[in-house]
Length: 124
Image (cartoon, rainbow, N blue to C red; front, side, top):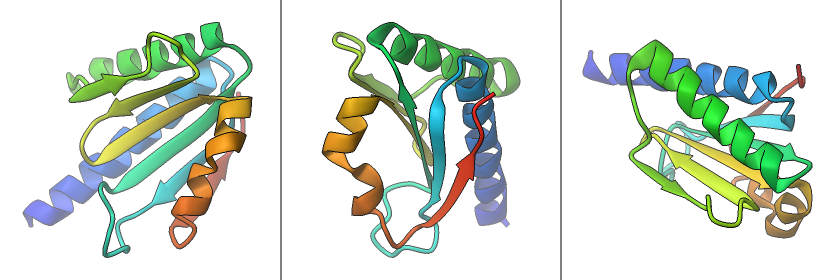
């Protein structure tokens, strides 16, 4: 029973994160479902691209605001705000990766989790 509630919460958080990304025109939005992988560190990775450091920061702020408004949850950990090439918002079961486009191509995070089910979303 608890597993179901956590699973539903992580799915809900991932949907809110996608909405926050779309709000600030993030693009190439992908949700990786890691729940079926034995070595997964969370339930979902949400990955998106932005055209500038300013947009990376704006998307991160939007995701944080949307998740807080709907769940009163803050990220457990945040990384990357200084340079804003890649900001990570860690909500335990959902980890949001916001990349400047060239950094996303360089790190290829989707390739590292290639066995995960992938869902793509349109930019708003």
